Length: 309
Image 1 (tube, rainbow, N blue to C red):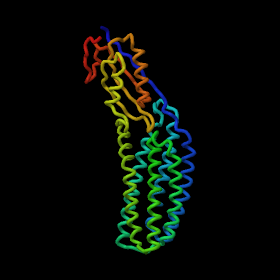
Image 2: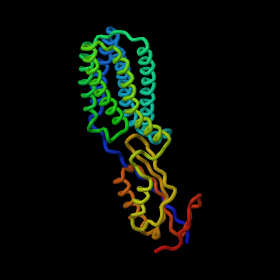
Image 3: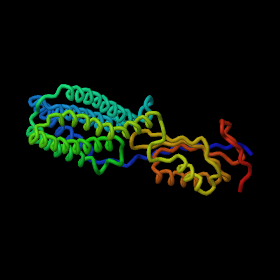
Image 4: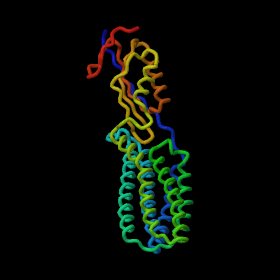
């Protein structure tokens, strides 16, 4: 039988995440004001807990700015040189944000350890009041991203950072009260170390996912075996090979595959059904090549499946 190959490239746009620009602008504005205030008070009262938390919040401001920039770049139309546009920038920004946070952790660790060996008195009341404002600012910013946190890796990163900051600020409030009543200034560098640990914990998953997507790995939450089973569940599809799944951006997943069918006259129906099940599984961009069961595409790994009814 003569070899027949059919190519189909399908594009579906990922669901739009609404209201993000406003959320980013509000979050960036609030955090810039708070960072300046917190750093000034921390410097005046010699509080490493406040200074380190201000440094972390400054990293969050940079992260929010970069994330907003990435989302705007992702909307730029594709060109002949960038056929997917700049969607990948969302992944690169997510990776960059993770690296920024890890650098901040290193600085906080170094400063905290130094102050453990060279302690100095701090003002507990000032720490408690300043951190109390931080609870409000970080909590409000986290709330702005809450509804969209499962739709995009950058938004999830922003939400996790702000939520972690709010919890850290609660801890700073408690330490400020303790210092105010007991005079135990050593709790300040200890708090700096705890802040660093919280940052590492909240950043690790983001770093892992960002590196995975940067290397064109299968996005977290997508199971390649399950995707293959979903494709094979479509009637007339005998086999699936050369299956590749990767992320175009932090919100869009792409797939290429060779599908073996036993009746080329049903190709359009099969194609339509495969497109439907893949979209339901979260794959927005699909490039499919169809082969008859008596044919082999000639690539390594292709098999001849014989005449199957």
